Amino acid sequence: MGLRSIGLRLVIAIIAILASLLLPALAKSKSKARQTVCMSNQKQLGLSTAMFAEDFDDKFPVSITPHTVQNHANWLVSMHDAGYLSTMDLFTDPADVEGAYNTLKFRRRKLLVDNRSRDIVFSYGANEQMIGPSDQRHKKISQVPDPGEIFFFGCATYMVVPHWDHERVYNASGPHQPSSSANPPNELYARHNSGKKNQAKEQSKGGSNITYTDLHYEYKNQYFINKKLWWYKNHRPL
Image (cartoon, rainbow, N blue to C red; front, side, top):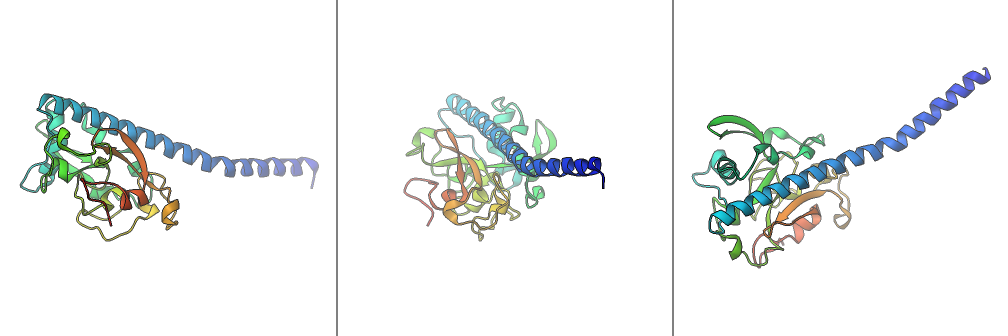
C-alpha cells in the first residue's frame, strides 16, 4: 500500500471523526433555533391577546360552546378575524416536526378562517379556566390571581388545555389525542429537546415553551410542568 493511499485513508478517517463531532452540535443548534421561533410565536400571540383585552374591557378572547373544533379555536380565530392576530401561521410551531413521534395528524384541523376553509396545525393550547369553553374561572386578565405564576397558554397537543390534562403540555408533541391523560412525561414526546427516553425526572431536559397570564414566557421542562406549574389559584398538580 502506497503512502498516497495511506494518506488518503487518513484524511477520510479524520473527516469522518470531525463529522461525527459536528453533526450533534448542528442538530442541537437547529433544535435551539426552532425553540427560539416558538418563543417568538408565543410573544406575538401574547401581544395579540393584550391588544384584544385592552379594547374589550380587559376580557380574554374565548372559546365557545357547543364543543366543536371550530369553537375550541375561537379564542384565536376571533382575534385573527378582528385584526389582532396577523396570521394563523403563528399558531404552528416549527419544532412540531422534529421527532419521529410528533404525530401531526392529531393537530392538523380544518377551520373556517376569513370565511374560507383552511388546514391549520395547532401547536399551542390555552388554559380552559381562562378562555373556556368549560369551567371558565376568570373572564378578565385583571381577575387572575398571581398572573406571573399561572399558566395561560403554551406548546400543547390541542388548542384548549383543561387543568386535569397536563399531558397535553408536557408531552406536547406526543401521539395521544385530547382527553387522554394517562402517560407520565416522556422525552420522546417533548416538543423541545426531545429524544432521550425516561431520564430521571429531575434531570429531564425535554419540555415546552409556556406563556403565563401576565404574558411573559419561559421554557420549562416536563417535570416542572407536571409537578409545579399553576393552572389556577391554589391548584397545583399532585
